Image (cartoon, rainbow, N blue to C red; front, side):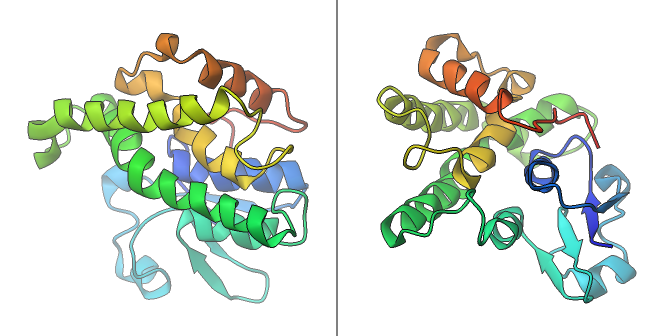
Amino acid sequence: MLRLYDYLPSGNGYKVRLLLTQLGIPFERIELDILKGLTRTPEFLAKFPNGRIPAVELEDSKLLFESNAIITYFAEGTPFLPDDKYNRAQVMQWLFFEQYSHEPYIASVRFLVMYPQVSDDRRMIIDFMRRRGHDGLGVMEGHLKSHDWFVGQHYSIADIALYAYTNVAGDGGFDLSAYPSIRAWLERVKSQPKHIPITQG
């Protein structure tokens, strides 16, 4: 069976869990506590040299890491990834945006707030990170004012990627009250078939 190496609070892990659940793909979830360094062991690094979750071991023993690469792999040939060349490029556009302009700020501030005991130099620039996080949310809000979904007329992995940490942005002190289009979009995502919350393994 497919193995997913995961950490339940992780939005990056949640992306993969959510997509696999919505696709009806069975998987074995292996919880690794990142605070205890369980993704930095020689055994894990021998398989996944980036030393992070999520990571997957396919049924044929092939390995994949990086959350957006993983969800793109599983979305191939499904409605979650468009066939149209331009729409596919738009999906990739938002996946890159999520990893460059969204996740480094929304997710990282959430981590720092949730785990105050962890020593991290980024605490010195947390106000800057919050501003950049709001910049990213502003881009999303602007797009969603005139679109139900991030690409085309349908829910896709672009939505899943951006939903994962936006859905829990409040954990990092991000107030979404000024983003009505984002809040409406979050509700649309939650209403999709087989949706699960981040707390569900």
